[in-house]
Amino acid sequence: MRTRSWQSCFLAATLSLASTLASATVYTYAADLGPEAPGATGSGIVKLKFDDATNDLSIYAGFAGLSGVTTVAHIHCCTAAAGTGTVGVAVTPGTLPGFPGGVSAGAYSALIDLDLATSFTAAFVNNFGGGTVAGARTALFAGLDAGTAYFNIHTNAFPGGEIRAFPERVPEPASLLLGAMGIGALVLTRCGRRRL
Image (cartoon, rainbow, N blue to C red; front, side, top):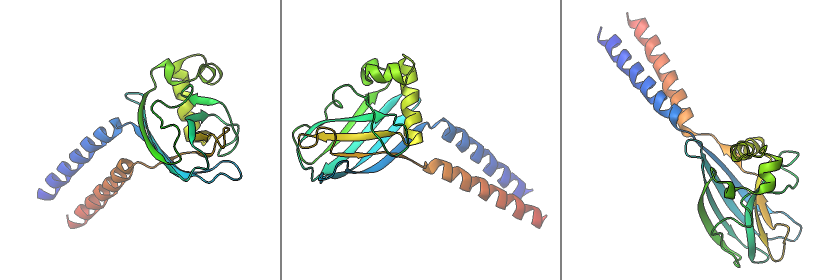
């Protein structure tokens, strides 16, 4: 009887955690930034986090060794093929807000509200988003998932872009934890049946 009571508590806790984890809606994408053109020397990293409950996009980037100094940076989407090609700017018009200009190394962090029309270029909203901000947001994350969106840093030496990367989704630890807990519950249940 004591084993069944313990197993019931474990199952209830697992289901409670599963409910909590199911409401966690943050998707993470990351990549190493590398030279986009012959002769470019820069490198760096980029990490994007999208919260689909708040529609916020967090951007973290670090870069160094650029051949020139930074002029603009933004996210482009959606290329014809994954991991290659070029396409117009999706987020944001001009440059990302607060991106450091005139430097060959630096770090950047920002929170972009993807509920705002000003977070997207008009061309992206019209060509990929069906004319709506919600459509643009959906297209951007479909592009990230498909590997057709890229983060790009442009410099005076390489106005078309010096370094870029196509971020890939990072598996969320919560899903792995939930799977491990489910397997653990199954093992405990099977062990309990053998003892009875």
